[in-house]
Length: 280
Image (cartoon, rainbow, N blue to C red):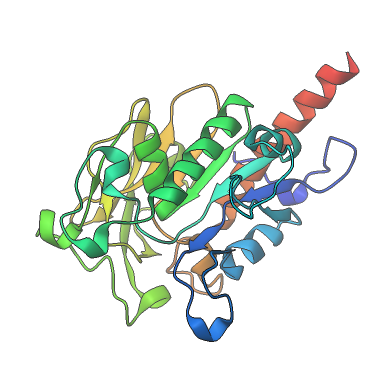
């Protein structure tokens, strides 16, 4: 039975979990915002609020870089992994094809390589620290690439048999059917769920699977990979949909609660283990 985090008592000093959220980058800021020549780092509030529904504290992690007028002291990415309990890689711009060894087929698909490299470093540090990682949309794609996989730069161009995975007009109201892989972690987490719908806002998708990753869900009927899980010694899960956009009142949409509780429960267990080691 899935661990119900919302019904548990935190084991480590009775304090909320601290969840790190990777930032989105805005390199070309509209002049009307008043940040001429600057890069903005930000988050979409829905994902933060989704995490906060389970009483987790959310911390956005600004990128760590030096040079010019940037000043950051001696903070390292490893310090984020040491202080926070888990990492969420949120959605946003395309993963750059350069990051997985390809040339962009079109200029508009060049993605954000600066963000790619920062998030790969974040992922590696949290995995090394034994802290759980959840990837959402772009986050799933980043996980796959970080483990050596590749992406379809554009589903419509390279697959041609796709359903509508990206509808700019519908955006968070664009949905498609989803099926879990039998025996997978998500199939266990969502027992007796045969057919559900999920939000879909992506034109890129997993092409070749990264090392030690397994597929846990596929879109219906075109079988685009929609969820992956790492088989290594830690919790790394990616979902292509946005659970934070799902209306809990709509029973036809996949409930994001079990996924969130599984992720936070793993963070809680890890923190409890660490506390016990310190006590010993």
